[in-house]
Amino acid sequence: MNRTLAALLLASSALIAAPALADKPIIIKFSHVVAPDTPKGIAAAQFKKFAEERTGGKVVVELYPNSQLYKDKEELEALQLGAVQMLAPTASKFGPIGLKDYQAFDLPYLFPDRATVHKVTNGPIGAALLRKLESKGMVGMAFWDNGFRAISANTPLRLPTDARGLKIRINSSKVNGETIKALGGLPQTLVLSEVYQALDTGVVDGTDGPLSNLYTQKQHEVQKHVTLTDHSFSAYVVVVNKPFWDGLPADIRSTLDGALKDATRINDQLAEEDERKTIDAIRNSGKTAVHTPTPSEKQAWIKALTPVQTKMAQQLGLTELVAAVNRDLTAERSQ
Image 1 (cartoon, rainbow, N blue to C red):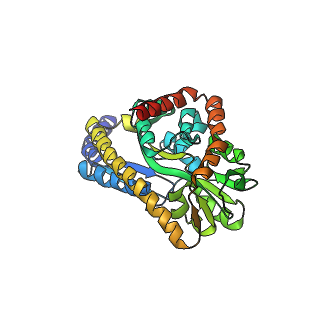
Image 2: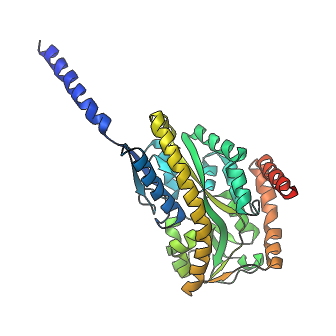
Image 3: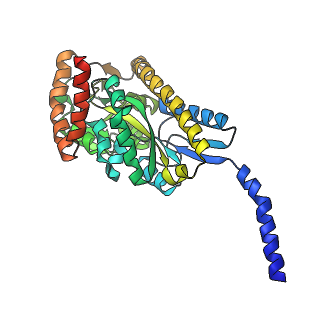
């Protein structure tokens, strides 16, 4: 009798609790490692706004910028474990977890301009890359621009040989490591949050990275020179934990997908505008001289680094991908 009563009480309490649980919002923890005022930080905030408004509060997006939750090396594992639901890491971060194709973005001088990048990311090649993330427990949602990469140091870097012997910070990309080695430099892998102190104390002499990070992380305050080499493109990949995404109602997934498409347009527009404004801001700071290579200097950089493209494409099994990109570029030029 007591057991029967207890079972009835438990069942009735579950029925009462069910609507309350159903009314709870879906929480999306969106973690990233850059500042809130970068294009990625602003686009993430816009995604939050769109997602919450368009779902009528059924979804709440919690933003954690500036490595508040996880650093570069930790965030992908956190996503796969479900500790966070959403990230936007640099494409090269997927190389170390077995998705070598993503390191194509780091290949020196593969992409001559943003139009070529977008043709790849918004076309069949980009779609195929996003599908490969599912094998790692993620859903690839979109590519976000972060601009072309530059090289900084405390000495002028007009020619590739000027980097010889310098300790240059890179992320975990093998391609970026080979790029610095080809210049005669010494690649040093550091997470983004540790770079400013490493530069300030002389642990490293310079950096390889996008201008937005150089400026918003205040790295330009401890670097006297930056050269706009534009040697590779820094692309982010917006990813969601796959079990979490698959468990969402279809209408919520559709709404979030639309919100992200709109946030992507904002990010890419801001990234292009921000690159120009950042160059001006760095120059106006009076702390760092910004050098745009002359045509002959640019050819010297291309000549020094193109062998890295060939070598690493072969080593990483990216020759077909590189050939596809070059075919698209050739076809575009012939039109």
